[in-house]
Each structure stands twice: as structure tokens, then as C-alpha cells.
Length: 385
Image (cartoon, rainbow, N blue to C red):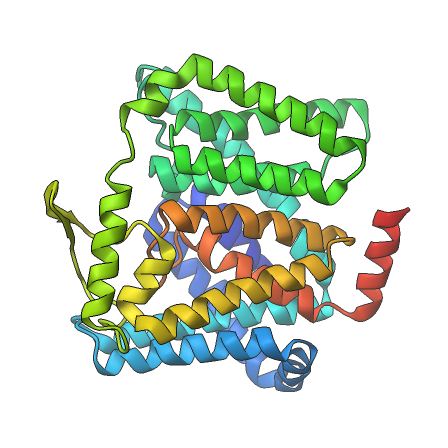
């Protein structure tokens, strides 16, 4: 489990700090895929226990991955075996975090705290390199370091970082000051990326955490959030409105038309396709929506399983809402679900920024299920007190 712990941390931190994507992927093979595969064989009894704890969620997950794997029989991808291998990698990733949580649940949640610090520091470095060293104008969309270089996807990752950071506020004055600085850098990254989807996802995530907290925090936090949003809109309205709706309604309608052309089987995972609209004949390389993307690739059966999987994940997180881990997972799910509405339509690629809003939330849900019952009770008592 030690290697899986390091692999989990590398997955979280290496997305920004790895010197290259090749190094990031190769290290994951050594630290996560191989140890995870071995753990699946050694601890197979615990996998049965995991299934018994939440048969609905685990069954939906297995059926979805199985349907995706089966789609390689009719996929238009150049190398179907490679697509099948990627499904296996995703399964190993999900199971690895569950097995880690079954023995050392604190490592899963502490890993998010470490990720908050490490990725928030990468925000500081990114802002310095992009705007100061490279002398880019403030109107330019921030490109982060490492694999969070994409302004939109990187902003979604940092929106999650803000949510994680909100759950790990230290009590000391000096530590609280450093925490506040890191939070500001992460927030600045989201804003400077100029992704309206990421901003909405972050607002939704913060609102969800406030509602879970309850009491006066809902009203106080809600007022502060509304004031911040109003000030932000007044200051950055030209940037927010300049791109209009970015063809999203037209893309959605064209995506539905594609689904109806092959409603049962879909195109198969890994198939290259173009979403062509009347006002953009060159087409887009994906549907810009995680759910319509699944429908295009896996048909109606696939998207029904996908929707059921996310509904089940929210139900599990809600059941654990009085625990620290439950609130972390719930906030992560809210941000990720918002991200799936506007972007993050790449499910089956190698580990990248999209994994943070596609597979990591589901892996954390499994970790929540797998943790020992005594841990759930203890964390719940701490939160309530």
C-alpha cells in the first residue's frame, strides 16, 4: 500500500509538477498501475466486501466499464486493444483508491490536503511565469505549468483545489495566513483562466459546502459569495460576455442528432468524430458535455449507466455528509458535475486534467464506501461536535 500511496500523491501533484507528460505517465505505471493490479489479486476478498457495502454503485460502475470495454468490438478507433487497455487502467485506478481507503483511509483524505498545498503553489509559479517572466498581458488566459497548461481544464483542477482547501483550514494564526495566501493563488488561477464553466463550477461547489455546513454560515457565506460574484461581474463583464454562449446550444443539438443516428451501440470508445453545426462547419472534436459524449460513444445504454452512476455517487456522499470525507467528496462531485456540463468530454484518455473531474470523484466515492465503519463513526462525531 505504500507504493499506491505514493502513486496517489503523484497522480495529484504530478499533474502540475511532472517535467513532462511522459514522465508523469511512466511514474504512474510504476507507482500505481502495477501495485494496484497486484493489490487486486492479493486483496480480492476486500473487493467482495466493497461490493456488499454498496451493491448499486459498484454494479453500475462495473456495468459501465464492461459496456465501454465491449464497445471496442465495434469502435472506429485505430487500435481497439489500446482502448481496452485504458478501460483496464481506469478500473485499476478506482480499485486502488478503494483498497487504500480500506486499510489507511486517512491517507486518501490527507492526500487531498497535500494536493491543495502542492497545486496551490503551482498556481503561484504559473502566475509568475506567465505574467511576469513571459510578460503576457492580464487579458491573456492563464496557462499553468505541467499538464494544467490548458486554461479551461487547468481552471477546473484548481476549482477542486479551492474546495479541498476549504475543508482543511488550520487553526493557528501563521498557518491560517499561509492557508489564505494559497487559497488566493488558487482562486486567482481560476479567474485568470477566464473559464466561465470553471467559475460556475467553483460557485456551485462553494454553495454546496455552505449548505452542508448549515446554520449562520449559509446566510453569511451566501451574502459574501453574492457580493464577490457581483463585484467580479462588474469588473470583468467584458471578458465574461465577449464569447457569448460559445456555440454550446448548437453543439448540444448536433450531439443529440448524432446520438439518434446510432442510439443503442454508439460509435464505441476512442472513435474520432466531429460535431458539426450550421454556424461552425469545421466542427468540434467532442460534444463539450460529458453526458452527451458518453451517449455518442456508448449509446443510450451507456449514458443511462453513466447518469445512474453519478446519481448513486451523490446519494452515497449525501449519506456521509456529516463526516469530513463525505463533505470533501460531495464538494468534489458538485464541481465535477458542473465541469461535465460544459467541458471535460474526454473519458478514456491517459491520466490528465480531465481525470480530476471524471474519475477522481468516482474513485473518492469508492474510497468513502471502503473505509472502515469505525472511521465513519469517529469522523461523524468529530464533525457534529
